[in-house]
Image 1 (cartoon, helix red, strand yellow):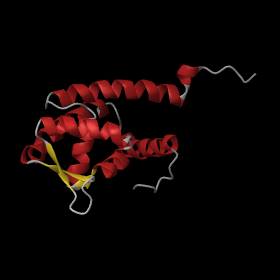
Image 2 (tube, rainbow, N blue to C red):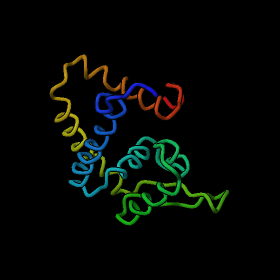
Image 3 (cartoon, one colour):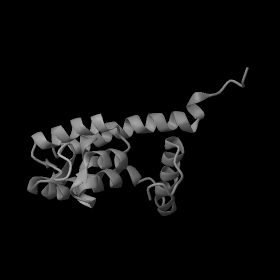
Image 4 (cartoon, rainbow, N blue to C red):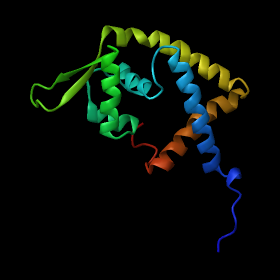
Length: 151
């Protein structure tokens, strides 16, 4: 039998607890602008490049296409995005921001800055610089990707 592990002292346990706490905090901040935490990641991708195919959005944010389809339906209902058929392939849709979706960016930005400021306040400047790199490495390791796969 393997050595008995102290689970709550492992990186995996800490990450699980962290992601739960983060998800709850993100939901709270995004609810202030009438969004759900997951929806923001679709908007972020469209703010980077409007008119993406649903499958591309799913790939970029690491979710299954049916999950993204439901999220897009929710964003369509509140008039932040619209789906348009591809001319070449009537089954394919591209997702575009509406005027309201583009204008949401400032409100989301304010919440994002507040979130970052609150939770990084206790970190040194060095820790703030290193943390994103460490998180990307962990994300890639857990996703089974090489660091350069999508960067």
